[in-house]
Image (cartoon, rainbow, N blue to C red; front, side, top):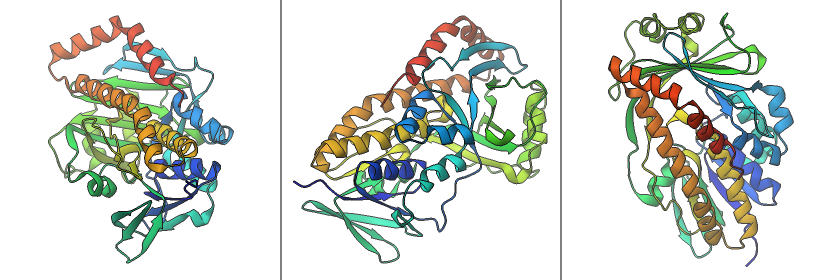
Length: 379
């Protein structure tokens, strides 16, 4: 059988754009169908660990990412008041760790994929598999035919629903806020991701390129809890007022418009997420909590591996089976680890929190080794 040429990608986020680039580089003809009218990423930061910068290197984008981002060297966990619990050096690999704005990473992929490979303003409705081909249908009336289809359309993936049926993701009792500011706290240690753990709450921050500071806060909350009437910024200032000084400082210096909020979901890892010449990627396949910082990083791994499998296997069905068997054990491990880490953050009782903090100090080298093994993986 001839190598499949046309690969339909649903979703133009980081995972979809990286997949298009990886496929384009190995001689396929990927086309992305994205429902938004313009390609844009929300104002948030991202840590690209060594397992992800490995992918950028293979796609020839590492140098540019380094110019756009900020070199990160340490991950430090602290108590609410700022006492160091664990300090993990993360610059021990042959590849750097980069703090980068999501939009800049996104644009880096778009710029390297031919313009005509993006079709915007197209909402996916469903598909039909017919012999070796797949037909995708869109709400505009557009129908396209391809040799394979990849759903990279996020947590509430329409491709996933069409493929596996309606299975809502699981709300994990956390609400998060993310902010971006030019303010650098006085006590900031260059190259550090600093995270603070309190009672049922957490806060962290890191430097991105262009001197910007990205921060994130999380707190246990019932599902669909609305914003406080006083607004997000005031609510956060109240929630974190007695924390380590950098925390309230960062909130105060951030414009209300630059504070985003989301509820946290994941899914219990299950196989399979492929069916013949259709598969899923990133959050559509294995959504995870952000506690290990691996959501976008595993989507980049997926993109690279799925392109490699399609190149190696003439038949997309065989390629997607191989891709899934390579990706499932790793993503399952990270989804479960992220959930365990989230549970540690749920602790609210002062005794439980004190115990957790003591445990973290005592288990510092184990936590450090765990991080290292996660980041040592090379897709």
